[in-house]
Image 1 (cartoon, rainbow, N blue to C red):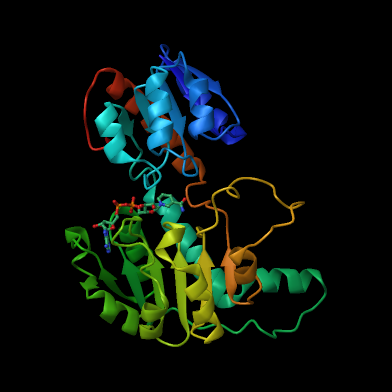
Image 2 (tube, rainbow, N blue to C red):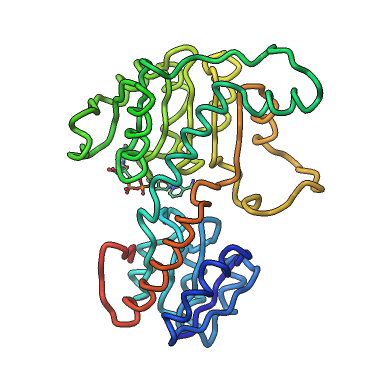
Length: 329
Ligand code: NAI
């Protein structure tokens, strides 16, 4: 089986190559290019392609893959909002993903962002390096006995619920389905109640039509003053321009984002020498109570190992035409 691996980084090779001992029939070629319509033709002669969160797996890309004889797309991530699922089904292309490779890797980053935003760790770090030992701008709040509101209580949201409970927080949640594993300590409420009661709001639902811009000005106004908002799920859950309005209204004690609307094109690139033509992200970063990381929720040793193992397992299952819970299309 020949697999073309798009947008490959060193850490991808380090987690996938050792597994080729086990998957002896698999041959992987790694390329830097992102999977998109113009690069899809590079997959001619391959059985499958492997792509990540910033790939464009829309209708055009899928058509080019099909024209070039590629019938398997392996997403090495959990989210698949960048895949045109209906088009893949229409073309008979199998798309598999890696759901729940290490929910704790993302949930622990969500809590790290909440703490960093609350206690302004990014400012504190720089201040001490500059011999500035004053505490100006660093005052936070205790999480103990405060209310955590978790939106989406699937695998990652559930892990975040457990972490918040460990901090001695009251945990409330909103989801379209209740997770029975959490019934002992999580109280399900409506989204409006969650927004009104939470001191910390953490987003863990997928990006769908129904969740697009769920954090908008109307919903921000329903939040408590001094709330902390964390998004480690997908950037477009939050309307960035309206978030900026909310920040200017002094709604937030802190904001931690591992994902943001403009991230495609930035993610995993060093753009430190680029002059950005227009960027709402830069406007966000100008606020003292915002910390942004570049989609690194998955980036732990455990998560990378699990992604590699499941992706190659998915390749074998796809080859045999077997369907399972990892199928997107
Ligand atoms: P999951 O599928 O286990 O859980 C998602 C939950 O969201 C489900 O319980 C579902 O019922 C709920 N949900 C669906 N529609 C909803 C709505 N309208 N309102 C509220 N809840 C809703 O997914 P998992 O593994 O927990 O991942 C969650 C998201 O995290 C992924 O969709 C992905 O976008 C993101 N993610 C981010 C990573 C990062 O590196 N920052 C890494 C992995 C995932």
